[in-house]
Image (tube, rainbow, N blue to C red; front, side, top):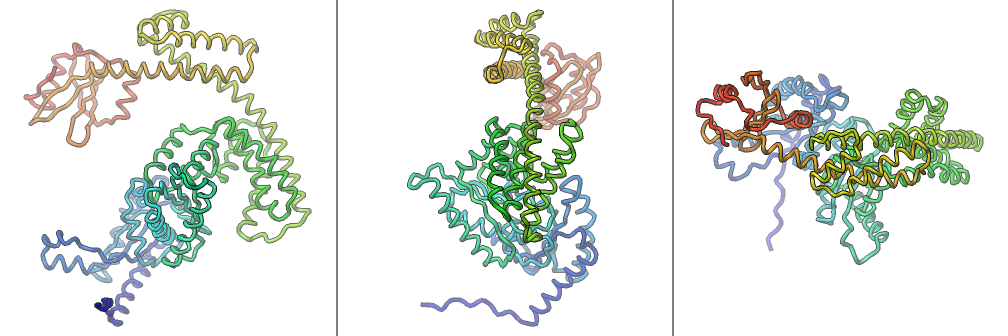
Length: 595
């Protein structure tokens, strides 16, 4: 048996000289640009692909092998627009100059903090893998340390559980440039095909194994900061989304994917689009949390003042904002929104209650971070009295919001029904003073079920009953559920008609060598879609009365969609000779219309 190969010995003198260069580089960068630097790390040597080596001359190959790669991360977390490439463009030449003045072999990899964040949203994890093998030189907010331990731990969990790891998400605070007390990550594990144990048993077993790997990752990376791992099984995750749990909404809104198999991205997009909304049951659950937590709080002392009283006052506050129509806010946002909406805008709440919420929150944070180590019974009594006062006032606020939002919600619903009905009748060229008779005629004309017309009749009856106060809240909700189907059917039908009309209004053309395009004629505009190999280039121009096209300008699919929703399309016979002549001037005499 052969003896194991020993690693090559490093010349102490060379090692000392190398360290001196790296320290010199770090010190010079921080001396001139410390405020803009979020992290510096020495990257591992780049491995050159053997195939690539064949096409490199000896000098270039040697140069590439001797490169000393150093990662410099620029902090653009405070910029109004991110990624802030102005910061990068301004500082990069100066940093490169510093590196070259020390040693030509020093090669800087410069990245904005937000660039790393965006690359992770795009599923590009290569830089993260390199950071996990790097030597951290400067890390004021522990940003690099967090990425390093998260990547190592992620690799361990994915290797252990393979396809069952659905998402591995870093907490949003990691990319805000803030110095945090610990590193938080969330893991979602698919439990949908587990049959051999109960979900409770599976949940605890997974937490134990994943936490053990977290301890191992801390030891491997040498990261001393507290590393907290929250493990969710997939079915619990769905339940938390359905119940509008604020932690899950914060996770979706602010988290950054270190690894994702397609769960996090779509749900995050749905939340941004406002398609994930808390159910009435979830709102009621949040509202009732206050009283339940207050009862628990009265049986405790130290923990009451720090945690139970805080959530007793926070959850009903979040419930009130959700009832108003705000997506479940973070604790930090709750105070700000409560003041902006209910105190200043709606004038439904007195300022003193916002001050109570701030006081309880500050007390909780003081206990959490160890600044407050003890509390007297008198202080707890004062806090309990404040919270009881607060909860009684929030109950009244809840009733005020319900009365206000119920009227506004049905008014918006009524507007939506009327609007889709009028749009449908207009698309069918049906003119009538009675929308009820009109929609019945439209259904017969378009071949839609007559039950759609019956739904509109029910709607008009509900409006009359509501004005006469002859209908209960529960009955209104039942009617609204039925009428949502009315809106959906008509919207889908209008979209299909618009699509067919659009297809008929397109005129294809050829130009150049095997180049294709499409023309869309509107009443006073033309859109030209140049069909390339990878994507469409969209251009637009005004059309004069004689058909002449003005200068083409760049456009995009969003602008085209917006205009198509408001403009009437022309048919093919709307194409004038001067329009064709204008197109030939733009695309050449060989332009050929495909009819």
